Amino acid sequence: MNQSKPSRFKKDSNNEFQEFVQKLHLQAIETAEERIPLYLKVGVKDANMILDAGCGSGIVTRDIANLTPGTVTGIDASKDMIDVAKHVLIDYKNVNLKVGSADKLPFKDNCFDITICNLLLMWAQQPQKVVNEMARVTKKNGMVLASLEPDYGGKLHYPENQKVDPIFAGQAIIDKGGDPHIGRKLRFLFVKAGLKTEIGIGNNRIWSCEEDKAYYQHARDFYIRALQNAGLNQKDIDDWEYHYLKSLDMGIQLNFFPQFYAIGKKIR
Ligand SMILES: C[S@@+](CC[C@H](N)C(=O)[O-])C[C@H]1O[C@@H](n2cnc3c(N)ncnc32)[C@H](O)[C@@H]1O
View 1: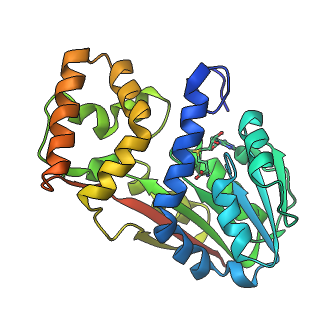
View 2: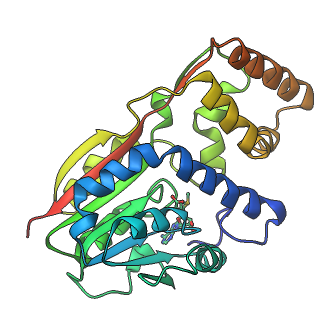
């Protein structure tokens, strides 16, 4: 990864790395109902060789490894993330982990049956290169899957908050070096990589207020930090949090933002 961008994927930013890993683990649980059907749809149960690009802490790699009799290779640009993944996957004999860039995958052409990434393209600085590389290392007739790629332009919620909403509508992602509109770009990226492409939205269910509240409570530090980093003063943060939690307790808050997926078949 380019060193000039802020990175939560490295340990040097104190608690932020730990918080981020914790958020990934929570997110993996909360999104299992979206991701697992996609893994099954691309055929992980019958695959021999699977790549998980941008595997991060390995929590999603573990889901894939549990579903396949084959071998899963996880690769991530961050050595710190791979160190966490080694710990998470210590008991998994069918997983290999490697530090490396998905912009230039250190694998030969046509060697994986399935190549997967989850929430990578939003953070990749050159997403087209990543998708091209995923396609290159996938065997002919093999599948490339990108899951959980959000588009904050489609974020819907009510009641609203004039000060906080623009921050969570994408600015916090831009400030951290991500692309909040990656979801709408998936078709372009996959078709340009020469893949026969299907695009969909993984989250077809809107979370209940109880689920939103449980998620917020687990990820609270992450959200408060994002608001602080965006320059919001403590009074506005407290005010927003009070009303947000109240609306959840009253059962009136609705939150939705689309998580896109792309499935590409390598046809030549
Ligand atoms: C949001 S995390 C997702 C991790 C994991 N896929 C998951 O869903 O839990 C994004 C990961 O992509 C990695 N990453 C970003 N750009 C990368 C690149 N060009 N090559 C490899 N890894 C990259 C980061 O280091 C980080 O671990």
